[in-house]
Image (cartoon, rainbow, N blue to C red; front, side, top):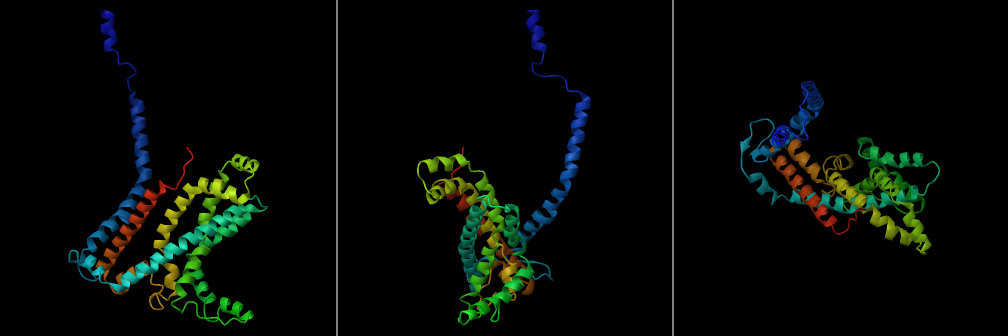
Length: 314
């Protein structure tokens, strides 16, 4: 009985904590908090703070010069009758729906070509990635405007074949197409991700398919594409969010007005002009939150739909 009593007094599986270990753990926690502090301050001051401020301003009439005046849902109701906002949504959705699939198709094609083990792969990979670094710059947008101008390089090349050129940027029918083409040209980032995904596909799958008599096309559609679906899904989500935020290219090419005839009036450009040119910051804040809702809803739809076509290798 005494032995049982003694055993019951023991704390099985536990040992007394050394005060020095507790002190060291506290010191490590403090060090971790010190290193996390810049990120936490950035999150609160640069991200969370402005988000809460813009959410409040979206319910006000604010012109940047006077105190905000609370107007409730007036800014959101105003969107229902704003034709320019509706046009900007149509332009942006066209840009996303057309530009993102084309960009990913080109990126996948180049990645498959580079994955064949050609000599100097690192050089070609760097060259093809370069447009992603430069495509969003002001300099490239100005260059693009010159290339597709009335006397630009495109019309000069067409003139060599006896084809009369046109003002690609000055025509409402083709202006948006030039910006979509610029977006497709910046395929480097998704290409690198596709190339990394292709390198992870085991070669034994292709060897087994070749033994069974499957050609290159059949191997691509039956092996490469199913194995790449997680990478494709990742690129779709990432590039869709980025496309909705496009601003610089359209702003520079259209001269900041979205012309001609609002054919290049991106949503972000209309938001910028509303807030910083018309000084309607309350309405611009409401527009910003509408964009958040649209992007969030489309991202949620992508995640829900991914259950039916994305295949993970368990």
